[in-house]
Image (cartoon, rainbow, N blue to C red):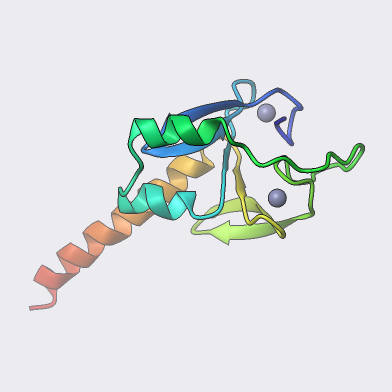
Length: 125
Ligand SMILES: [Zn+2]
Ligand SMILES: [Zn+2]
């Protein structure tokens, strides 16, 4: 599949226990539905499962000439806010596209709020 920002071929790889697509050119990420949650919860798959999954990518009919369409299924993307990050989310397969640094922002914000909850427990006393 190709990066929707710069048309570079994206690389599949394991990231924090989930299968992600990474653009080596503009450093953006594509995550399928549910993978962000899985990363956050730390309930990643083992590398054997990820390897198995990498070979059975769903095939969609390519639509030529749709600008800014989902790189996975070619449906329309909609803007989506996750914390302070602005993502593109597919209206059909619900995959999410993260521009450079946005994935980090999302993961870090979750960790911070978790920490703040813990600290809050001690503060509230
Ligand atoms: Zn790119
Ligand atoms: Zn899609």
